[in-house]
Amino acid sequence: MSASPVIALRKAIRAYLLADAGFAAAFGQKLYDETPHGTEPPYALFGEAQLRDWSADLSPGAEQLFTIGVTSTMRGLSEALQLAQRIADLLDEAPLSLEGHRLIDLRFLTMETRREQSGRFARVNLRFRATTEFFNGAQ
Image 1 (cartoon, rainbow, N blue to C red):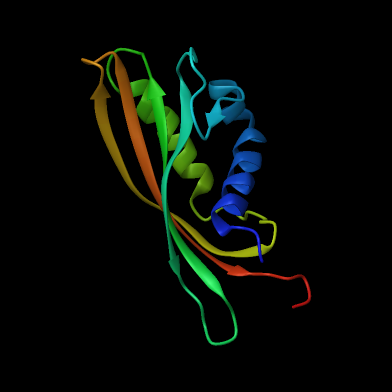
Image 2: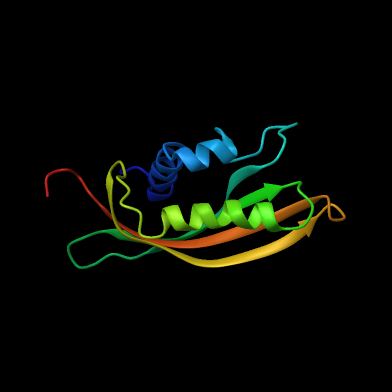
């Protein structure tokens, strides 16, 4: 059985974002699958992922729709929007290397803002689409 394309993509995204000096300056290592209790914003969080079959005749593949959320406690949405835009810019068409899969395409799709907990937190959700194909190394 091959590795999950969702896991492979998240690992590649994590490595790519954490290697960027601008991301590291803004977030440090705060890119999570689940936010640890007591973590102070700003931070980025992998959200929901939807996986669909995207296979061709000779090539098994997957399409993923996924979100990355940015949370901030700064008044207004400007910090959260700036940080989210940095992630969108970095990941749109990024040349990621995935374990067990080949990235065909990665695109930024949409951005949505909202306030949580009576306006205490600003949240920006970024939605992306990625297509991958299984890669066994022998191709």
